[in-house]
Length: 152
Length: 185
Figure 1 (cartoon, rainbow over the protein chains, first blue to last red):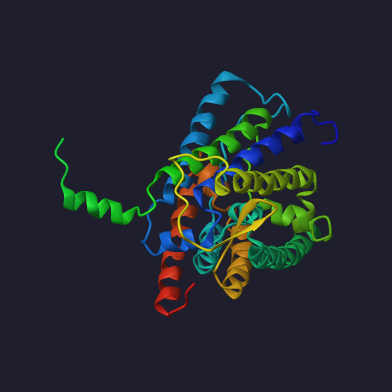
Figure 2 (figure 1 turned 90 degrees about the vertical axis):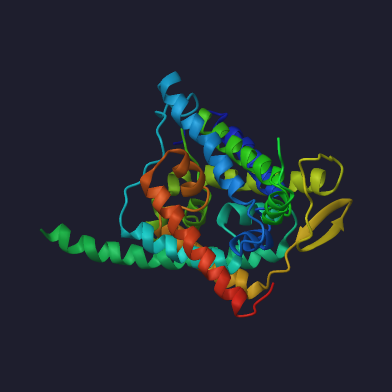
């Protein structure tokens, strides 16, 4: 980790800049616009997520055929595949309630701060509280589950 | 081409702000993801930042697993904030104009040092309590709108497609109930 390529963080920063500019331009950084979509008053919002998914999908499909490994990390190009379990449904539902109530998701919240939305600090504070609560609880239950397994 | 004015009006009603700002914004979000992926092989999501940043201040094992990525995730998030600020200083401020951008009427605009900034009218309690649930749900559900929605859907991951269908459906139901209860904005 320590001997990463010197351009690793600058490249991540540039990618973040483009990502954040896009979230601002799309108005997904505005909770009102997300809520208006969820109320079917403005159906434009899916063009943001699916537009981005199409662009990244092209890269995810092509790059593994062009190169074996990423130049700055040496890591192989892989798709983002995560195992399915009921946490995907439970977490997705909890996230859905939060997104529907607040109109903001994590990436859009960071961008919202950038466009001047100081009020979004309430949402960011809430996200850290929520992330801490689940992490605290899961760290403890993992330790509890690991203890009897270690005794076997 | 025969254009039915009734049909055209119906479509215009569904997209009162057009689609170009959404599509262009989405292409840029995708481009930012691709830039990082091409160089590093990492399909970056936004919500892991919440836990990786907590690893600086908490010893919980759940957060410590992200110690290796916490520095670049901080850089990624700083980039998102500053990229959005660059949008505010250019397009939102009217310094750069394009017919692809529809400014809309939501929230409040204000000016600081010649830069047009924007703030929400959505009530703080909605943001805070909604934020708590977003923090819990994205981390238990293995991703958010960028991790599942952009990178996972882009990967044609069944897990992510199910995740997106779940949070989208529940979010629509929640927003409809909240609006029906008379909460606005």
